[in-house]
Length: 281
Image 1 (cartoon, one colour):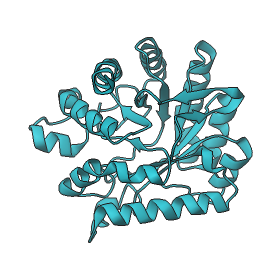
Image 2 (cartoon, rainbow, N blue to C red):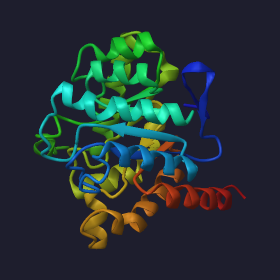
Image 3 (cartoon, rainbow, N blue to C red):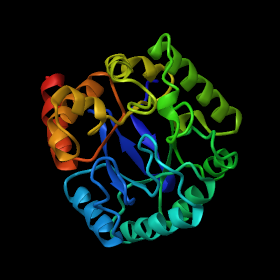
Image 4 (cartoon, one colour):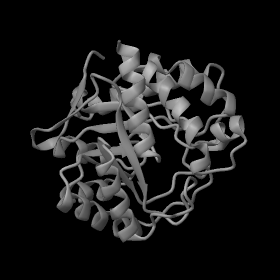
């Protein structure tokens, strides 16, 4: 895909022509794999988002349901309570693009009404039949992520013969289904789902070959603090995995990613500024 920006509502856009845009992760959950629920408190989540804005983040991604391996589903009312007030508060204080990380159409709809600009669906519109309609009618971009099964069961679906080829084929199918549902092709992005129903080796193979997915749609990579980084570095969890996450960000930048999702915003923003400037000289 020969594009260099993502069109948002209200005539705005996210540019990635000079390097990936940084998406900062705000997990408004009590059981985040990366931080143990540090942003579950609403006020801490809002302040964390504003700190990301001050650090130069391009997008803030707000999620109210954990998608770590084995995670149990969250009730609709609970997910709405966790996310909508946070999104509304961020919007009242900043014009920063906001993503809602959800697989539920009603959450997406309420989030967009509160000020969200794009939808990040780990099920690629397959969980909730109404999600495609919300994305189409509200004319917002959508990230279609690859995952077989659901977070609770995804580590039981890791039987790939050719992980890169199969993930590419399935992302192509998700994209075709979204287009058939009336979603404009220029509003579709894809994410190979690093850490979602893949083995240690499969994650490395996907990251190494991630440029292949750019022919489908603009590419989103979310490798921040994932378990494969911990296995390589011996770091148990959380912030100690930051250096390894920056190495993965370099690989994503080399692959031509449009967006890199990260927990460590200031470090990733600075890293990419320097890395991409050197690379383009």
